[in-house]
Image (tube, rainbow, N blue to C red; front, side):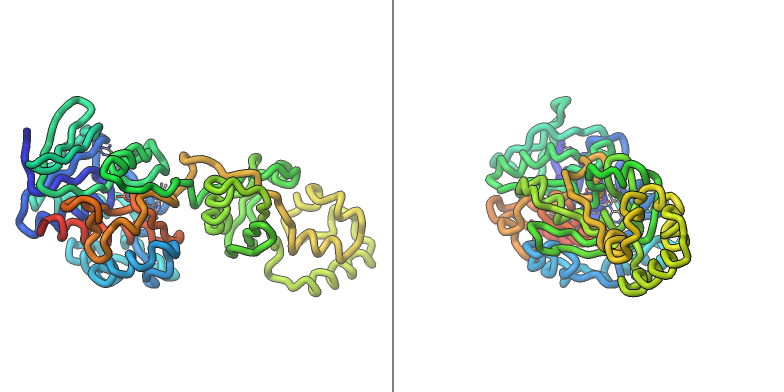
Length: 398
Ligand SMILES: Cc1cc2nc3c(=O)[nH]c(=O)nc-3n(C[C@H](O)[C@H](O)[C@H](O)COP(=O)(O)OP(=O)(O)OC[C@H]3O[C@@H](n4cnc5c(N)ncnc54)[C@H](O)[C@@H]3O)c2cc1C
């Protein structure tokens, strides 16, 4: 049985950086990764560009319950720490409206620079090591793979990710290890995920993308708002603005089984309701055909898709249908289309500042496996880097 000071289960963003920070403390480290390669999700991130952090990074960009823990970690390794870490490795960064990317705009350069550092530090990596059992003995944490290989460590970092995009490695199967140590799991639900809606408008307009303002309304209360692209699809709505408001919707529908959920879409956010009504009144007076009433305001296809409403020639009803179109939500798409996970290991059982389990000494957590989820825009990778770095340093001192 191979022995290391620290065993890291999961070779994603958080596991890689945890290994680097632990090894820099001079201890022996191993990464156990079930895939044939580390960092597969890094490669897929940001549409292949890796939005690795955000200039506005702070705890307010994360779920309420996680903020004290996030703050305690960012106090040690936050926005500047992350930037400096990558600068020192040799990656040049640039930001777009606060979202930080590698200057190359290639996530492969982020992974490559991390791999160079893993190699320079001679960090052991066990690929195709699918952890199947983790137990605690007098000698430390024993991690057993599906093929019965055993590795032992004085300390252990769980960096196995959440449940999104299982093809990239993390499928939530690692929650059970934490459960065995007594940790509570908040039911994971997919976020940054398209929304399922049965509405003829979505069906007729599938493939159409417009800029819109959207709101999530749960039991009559507006919970979230966003502006950005909205994409009509045959199953409902997608696009950046929908992904941005999907978290509260997914939690409500998938975790709490709520039914009274709607998305309100302002399809013409560049005009006030009054301006739209006045424009419609002008067009109605000029005898515009039904189909042409919205020409130049919305793509032409909307004239056909919304013909029943346009037929009324009622400027107030039409403006309402454009500025505040309600869609009843039936559900969300699944894990294969979700960028992040909401839920995971409950943060109350994890020590602020160190990320050590309150239930088992020497056990640490990093990344998306915890019930910490950030907004879109680089916050989730930022959490993975920050928590990985801190967990690595702490595990090295354990
Ligand atoms: C398509 C996509 C695009 C994204 N884009 C961005 C973006 O631009 N910016 C951003 O901030 N966030 C983005 N995210 C989210 C971000 O990538 C994740 O939050 C982050 O990678 C989480 O890092 P992690 O180390 O916690 O988990 P992961 O990166 O998922 O790594 C966990 C690792 O653990 C391994 N593992 C799991 N179980 C076991 C086991 N039993 N044994 C051994 N190994 C195991 C997995 O194979 C995986 O390699 C994106 C996510 C997706 C899916």
